[in-house]
Image 1: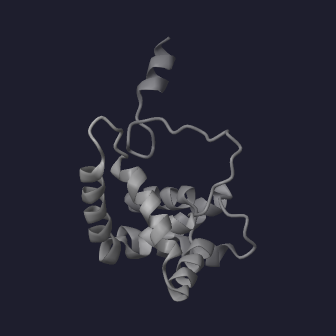
Image 2: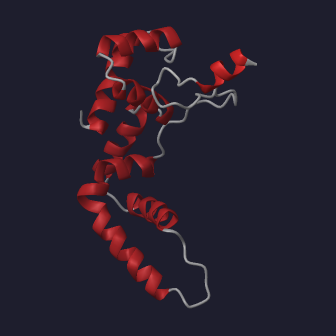
Length: 155
């Protein structure tokens, strides 16, 4: 009993103090959807005021007693519509980001490692050991993942 308490009350090595669960679902990590990449590229610079104003108008136009969509649901729907109406150059940029972006799971894993103040080399070694990437060119892949994660974290 003493060992069980000791084993189940210690903090994890991640420093967060919570157990990490294994993902046994068998689901493959998914890359971004086009509307997600579009949002990543343009939301802060161009899309936020448009969507915010449209949401305010939408809320005012919903009759009393009817269910109002959440901002999250409204924003995702609007992003899809706005992307359809974009130029071919923007669509090509979005498609390139979808193809080249790391999966959300990969990004979160590298982000956790960066938050632990690991060096790039330590991150690469940890990713190699975990066999996160099945790529033949693992150095280029890990450099890309680290670079993209640092860009998003603005480290």
